[in-house]
Length: 234
Image (cartoon, rainbow, N blue to C red; front, side, top):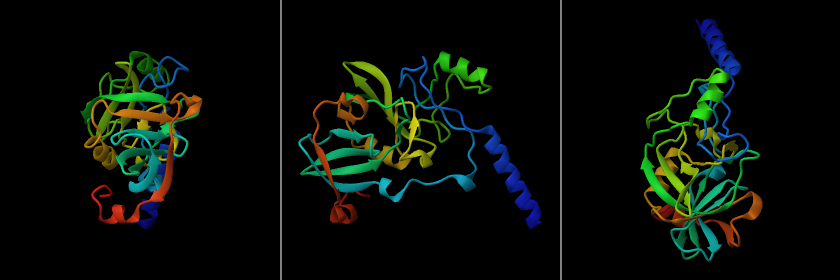
């Protein structure tokens, strides 16, 4: 029986390896961020990894002049900071755009949605269909949705940038360059941020091109007492 189970497990992993992954890309070709991330194909539980310890939610000492409620996203180090004030911030691990899909700038949270639906553009559906990947016109929110438990839609000048801060059904991608420009968070973390970040909040994305302009922040490390005993680290 043990030998049979071993062979079956090997066959499942081999089949999943042949499936590969569905690449995330922006509809319209080289222009990043035109849509949200595509989900990967089924990944065997045995090979799924959890994010590194440093990407767990923590309260940190952050030296910055930005106002409380501001969000700073450091795409180089894969951290998102929610500014608390008094040189403190809640730090979350994130996944960011892969090579060629990174971006920077100052935007705002224009809309928020719980368990958001996913609407891949027609161009994406056509391109993926040509590869044998059939995408839905609309995928309703749920645990299998690539946008995860929450989404915060990022706007610039009143217009939707098509970038989002959202959850993910692939927590092992946190800390990696995997998306088509959206900022991924673990579901428990995006729920935590969602409850605290207000619509209209300023979001500074520090990344390629330095289009975020002048922004000063210095992560001085974990605020141990606030993380253990404070309300921000739970």
